[in-house]
Image 1 (tube, one colour):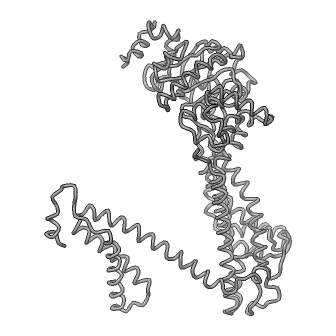
Image 2 (cartoon, chains in turn green, brown; image 1 turned 180 degrees about the horizontal axis):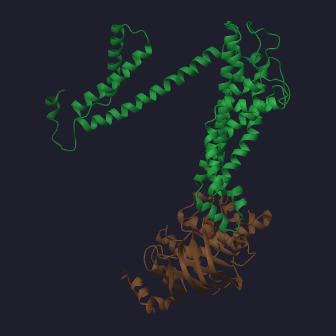
Image 3 (cartoon, rainbow over the protein chains, first blue to last red; image 1 turned 120 degrees about the vertical axis):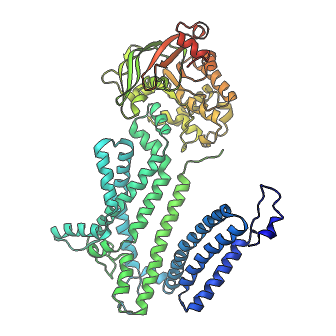
Length: 353
Length: 258
């Protein structure tokens, strides 16, 4: 741009011309303005298109201006930084908008009444009713699935890391990998085929079994990674004290990694809490409160959301309930995550004096 | 309390790789024996065969005999866990248990084996920390995490943890190589005190240290990379450092090794 203007400053070989600190913001503003101009001029009415044009222009402008003023190496540095920022924004915008839409639409009917009542005799198109049955169903199904999936997953991981050698361990690892890729509907169909063999009606525990299948590989993988992070020296220190191996695992290895293991289990729970397909097949859904997961159809939060949307023929009351239930589900998963972080921090190896 | 170690014809393998070959030596009770030699010559491997820690590495196995007061550690029906209670170990890098306080670290060996009352534990912890010359530095913060101590203090904590279970033999695998000279001096003084009660075997790369702390010194060497390590000679420390009987030892000690 103006090599002549900056060249008089170049006395030192160490100090080159640099763009001022505010230049990224200025370039971003300029890119946005040009993008809006292009968008209006070309008659594009989607704000998303404007944003994407602005992002591309921002990268081009950054590179061009930096290359002129600072040189090619600094320009590459700046474009790498800019790429990271643009990618960050592209990832954050949908996330923020998702939370925003869910909260703004969900709070409309979300109150104490909504949380403590179920659909009962309320027709799908009428206002009123609530998610109580779905909350109970989700809690019981996810809770039972966790009771089955988490111990099996953690024990499998302990086997793989602490004991597993040779072909059996390789086979287990392979099948865990395969299980990670099982679509949730397939897990549902698998349990459904068992149910059909024994001629059973839909009930909550069947859903738990399918969810446990989905949960196990996630728990195995994350627990395995956490156990591998425990330094071998700690195991050796314990063994060298004459502590048996099983006690070493129980008292030294697991406490050292419990924070990470808990986080992994919570993430797995968060994953299965949002599963709809196996629940639809196996638990069926129920507008009435059914506290017994071992008999009769139950409701569940994700299934409730789906059914409110699909079976209400576009009634606004049902849409509002679906959004409120979505918000409840997100809050449920978020509370679990916060609890997991709390446990992880509380149990993490302490440092400092 | 201290016991004698008698090794005869010991060969150790990692899988199909022979790490050390045909080692025989005697370690007297209440003495300090130092192992010196170049890296990879099998000093640590040999040390680990003395309390069967060698087997913790997948594929680790041995041939030959290790007698602890006439009882073969590798005999039929011997429980490696019991062996390790008799033969304690201190490692190269200080490794206190990060989830445990200073007190719990020292009590770990007893508590993890069950059946100890709080009052008994208090006594053992105090005695062990005093034995490791650490009591005065940590007595006011026994409930703080062990990882908050300095490197030298952590290593003495590990020694306290090892002697709390009252072993007969204490193995030390380069216990000072991660420490500064002052902490090293503290540990060396401690070794001098501990040898009144334990049989001590120490691996070290520091020949001055071997000369300072040990009664007997063993020199290990290997003929070429990939070949198993061998015991070249073992003798009184004074003799090894003044007038060794093998030329290779003299070359190594005087730095003419090559």
